[in-house]
Image 1 (cartoon, rainbow, N blue to C red):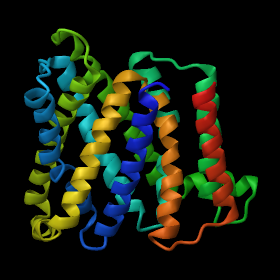
Image 2: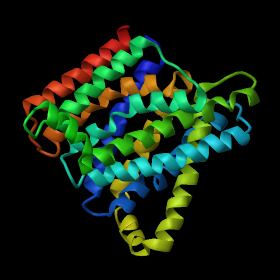
Image 3: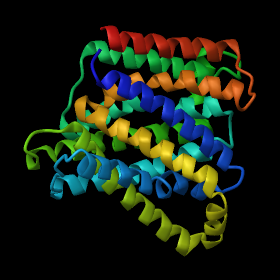
Length: 304
């Protein structure tokens, strides 16, 4: 089994855990606060990862360049927007459905990569992505009468629009992080995906934390006190989020973002488990069918 596969699966599990914790925090913080803890409380853990690699394992550090800075800035702000929208839509539908809309990310990441850098993927991968996206669409209409009309019109609902936009921004961030990380390779004695990913994570998450902190101080100062009061669960969000990001960045250094995000659809399995066992939300047959299609898409991706 290629290394990127287990890294992606573990990252998907951790990302689902982070989303569940953020949904929990959404009851104590507003959308901005719940988004900030993902980055602000993740900074110490990202620095620890990098210290272990550099000081503990004596791995050389890369030298940043203009290309790295450009991709890191685009990816960092796209991820802030995507995370904000994902947390926001939790208020509209249940946890599983809210997450499902953003899972159109693989198809959107493939389109973004094609437009921005001319990156192409195989027809087999496109088929796998298409199967998973159909599964997502089924989940999106699972609470309504299933007709062709409802399947099409569901895409225009408020939840769908925000979810699709979240997926689009996640797609941009994934492609950006891949090329930010790849741009560091020439400054190393030999390409080192783990170091490249770790360095990218540290630079990006510090930038995100500072940018959001400035916003909160200027626009939502009262939220800062609640963020500090929620430090215990927020630390867990930060740890899980930083660990998941380290995995994502490493995997996307090894493979195109669209391929990684297609396999990452396995997160929907973890999401449904959280929805049922943690949030006690009901799951119907169409949602199960959609979930099975997502699994089929994942199997197609891995086996084709």
